[in-house]
Length: 164
Image (spheres, rainbow, N blue to C red):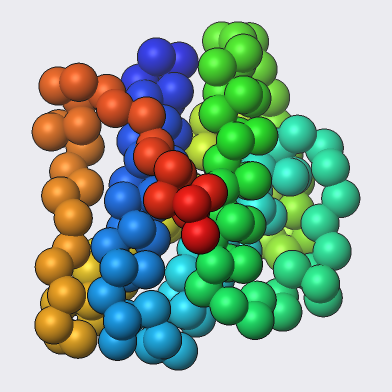
């Protein structure tokens, strides 16, 4: 189970980077507030569950503020995903069964594995919405299928962001 969980997280990071790049390269999409809000929601949820998992504080007031540019939002994804990839590469089987609690869903505990799967599935659903919105604005969504990613397991490419 650990290897699959690691792959699903790595794929999520890759797919998010691909989607962000495609949006950034399409002028109308890069300015679209609906896309910004969806992307921010993806990042917000990802950061919440990741920070809960690693035991770091989550400042909901600060985290809930929409960044002032798509580039700033994208940098938030990159920084979060760099930490997350480091964490997942060191993840041990014994850690995935540890339980987490959140005040947002009281009276229930979630395993680290369940929290990671929630983030991946949640991100996937909203990436689909973003891809639909990108297409409606005249852009072309990238291929983000997990099964195709498995063939070569490419790492997320952030070089385009660093060149900005």
